[in-house]
Length: 145
Image (tube, rainbow, N blue to C red; front, side):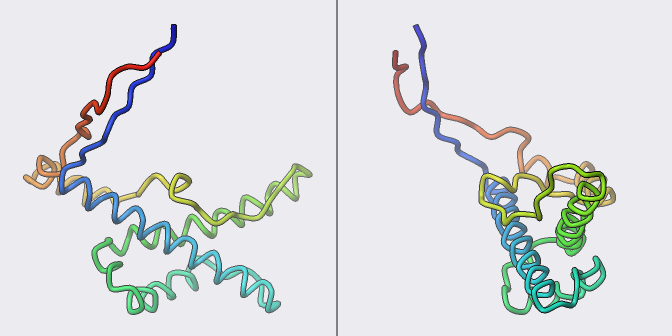
């Protein structure tokens, strides 16, 4: 007999902030990827990591919520876009099946990369305890068979 349970996640305010940053990073990834495709269609080739990084202040001006995300995290998003194209070219050269990078849905973008010095600072501060290490889950129903 199989049982299934339904859980409702109740993240702390700090965890909600991180989830919002994750969504902002996903939107940034999709915007930078769109820019890469536009440049390629215009015949100018794929932008480098530096040229993608130079677009970030312009994106921050258009979207004020990006100011809440660390700049180095956004630079890592630009690096992920560039690595997607580099991996595509490497697979093509090796004769393997290759597709260009795809736009990310909510479920497809699930991690942030913080710089090491920020992690060390958080370990010594109370911000880490505020963010919590686990998401509390409350059962919302009985088991079903």
